Length: 333
Image (cartoon, rainbow, N blue to C red; front, side, top):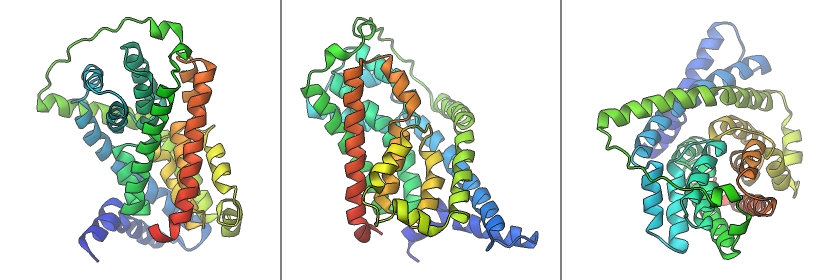
């Protein structure tokens, strides 16, 4: 086993933990080859694995994020123009909160500050869809190639979507109170390394409380899919035999509200049951980018025409990504 394969399997994937839990359950008299024992093993393993990765990743990302408070981000974005500004905005979105609803207040602040609308939408698309956490987690499940391509494609969607909105001059469709809001640009105090670490610890605690219920729900659903739903059912609906699987997965993900951590166990279970890779990724993108609560919140900031354009761009992009990954699946895995 190569060094990187060891990191992917034993460090990120924590397969040693799965084996340890399996041995422990066997000692307790549970047959992990049966549905009940297998479900318990899946639930304990994924909950512990995702919790450990969650806390580590939030700490690292929050520490990085402490260098990019809203005021500094606005100044950075203000230095760029055209597609370059959209690219920088999308990249900044990778070190922001995991939830789409958490990104919307920042989007409103950037828009009120007078940043180009397309730039702010590139940020809004990339923030929940693509982050450092998703890269690490996807690597633990799908491998390095899939994870990197997922992030790159997500950034492309964010840049393309923001650029299109900019070209269509949709500024009149931003609500009046945001366009006329006065931006107060406060200087952020310089933080010491200890203060940044304290900030990161606080973010771990706050985000964990917010995210953990969704992890439990996601892992529970994943355990049911993994051990109780026949493989033939999953293959029939989300496998290669159904040309509409990607569309169904994307539409099913929109009403849900979760983050990358809550969708990972569901995606893992679907993959093991024979669902196509692109179909799974479409579901994950839809959940993290177009959740119904975030759409309702965004409606307070933009008018229906701009909201519909945003949803349409994201939906089309997500579906195209799904079909692209399905076509390339044989080469990626």
